[in-house]
Image 1 (cartoon, rainbow, N blue to C red):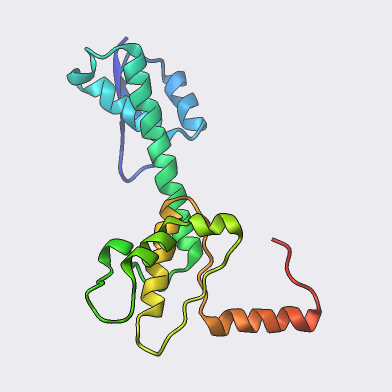
Image 2 (tube, helix red, strand yellow; image 1 turned 180 degrees about the vertical axis):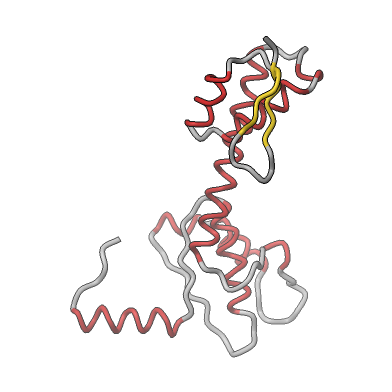
Length: 173
């Protein structure tokens, strides 16, 4: 039998039409939550351009698709959990404005090498100078690189420190 699998955008379940794979195989892949793999498999099965590829090449494409989907989902989750106040990125920073920003320093901070030393980053300056925007841009870059970020304004973390001092106990994390 020959069936083709397709996924309805409005549904989380797959519907089956002619493909060479048994329905149970596709259902098992779904139960493993391999959505990127299954979606790429559907694309491969419905397109003739993949037929000339070796098994290893096709398998590599399927695995890459699943890896990319998971990495994207992890990055989206980490960006959400960081609670960044805006969606600034390093690429959007304007270094031509005279605010005393040194491009090299900002780019080095965005790489995250300083985190291996257990160092934190606190950005200070006058009101309206772009501290929050700069912090968001650096944080975004670090999250893309796989670092976990906790973005807080100083009044929030000062309140947290005061609370910890009152309880005479710092959180374990």
